[in-house]
Image (cartoon, rainbow, N blue to C red):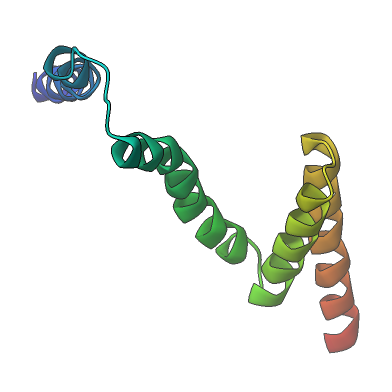
Length: 104
């Protein structure tokens, strides 16, 4: 029974988070500062979640840093998402293989 209560509480919480801004702010936001701030919030949140995950998702910090550098350089140059992802994965693979061969 408590499982259904937890699911209902989370559904209500998720619903309120999405509905309250629509009901509270009915008029358009006119403040340029607030509009520009709200424009960059998704990018800041995504960055705050992604960068630590990139660095800690591999066996070593060095291979995560190599993937991050490769991803940033290729994204800055305007490459597609699939190219960036595959190149970052290849950088991790190369770093892990190099570390394995150097320690063996």
